[in-house]
Length: 159
Image (cartoon, rainbow, N blue to C red; front, top):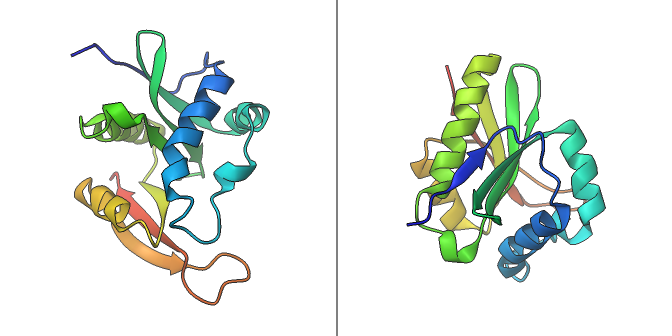
């Protein structure tokens, strides 16, 4: 198996077009399954670069190829993890688990008590996967204009 190089936080990341393409490919299959549409539909390479100015980015590469990513936004004593993506041909190899291990180790050093992330309610397989990684449901929320839950907030304690 090809060696993977994980960087977190990847302060030198600059391949915004590759990042946008990876996220676009990763989020595209859920487009017909979730309502409302993902915020990914509004993101561009430029907006991702701006987003990274306020958040940490995790990159995972095989050679020059970006195979996985996540954004992490510190919120005082905790952090929000979002835009987690793994290239389709690289899934089911423990990459998400390893990315979260890097984020958790950094978080413990930074004094974060927990991590949170949100999963769309329709994506039951993602809810199960994050549950297997130690995240627990803490709340269900509705997007603006919806009278039913559309997202599930999950939390993982670090301390």
